[in-house]
Image 1 (cartoon, rainbow, N blue to C red):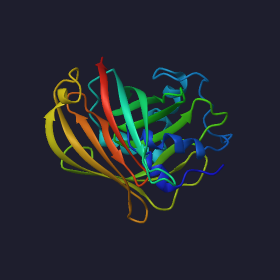
Image 2: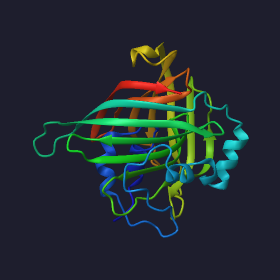
Image 3: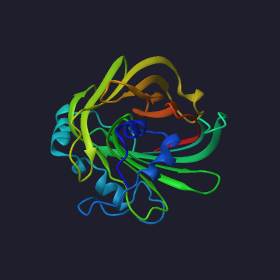
Image 4: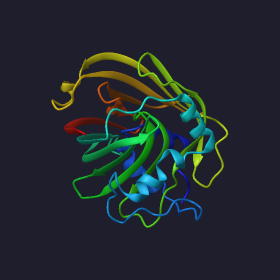
Length: 270
C-alpha cells in the first residue's frame, strides 16, 4: 500500500496526537522497508521497550536534526516519567447520512526524558471493540515532532517512521508565537521537497488542576495549526502546556473529517 499523503502526515504530527486519525493510519500501511527499523514486539510496547528506546532517541535522528538539537542547548525536562490516562471522544463526519459518527477511546500515554531536552512518548489507544493502536514519538516538549510512527497492534507489517531530516526554524520558547519548520520524509524514502510547518500561539494561563486535580502548577493554552506545503491549514489543535513539567498535552483537535475532545482521567509524574 502507499504512503500516507502529506495532509495525513500533518493530521498525525503533533505530540499527543489525533486518535481521530488512528483508523486512517491502518489504511496507509505499507510493507516495511528492509533497511528500516525492525518490527516492534507483538504485544503492546511500553515506554521502556528496547524498540522504543533504540529507534526513538537522539541518536536515531538525522545528523542535521541531531546537530540542531545539540546546538539549541535545550533545558532538560524536569521529570523521569509521566503516565497519563485519558478518555477521548471522537466525532467523525457521517458518510451518506450526514449524521456524525462518535467513538470513545481509552488512551494510555507514557512520557519519559529522552535526553537533550527531548521527550520520548508512547500512546496506546483502545476502542470498545478492543482494537488497539500504538504511537511512538520523539519530540520537543510534546508538540514539535522529530520522529513519529503509528502501529496497529494486529499489523503484519510496519508503516514508515516519519522523520524530520532538516530543521529550518525552531522556536524553543513556550509562550507567544512559536514556529517549527522542517523538511521531512518517510524512513527509507527521499525527503519531500517542501517543508512542513507547525505554528502555535499561546493563550490564557490557568490552574492545571482544572485538567486533573493531580496536575500541579499552571497550564498555558497553546492554539496550534498544521500547515501543508500549499499554505493550507490541515488541522487545528488546542494543547495544554504544563509549566511544572515542561510538556504539552492535547485537549482538542479538529480537521475537515473529524474532531476529538480529550479528558484526563488520571496523571502521575515521577
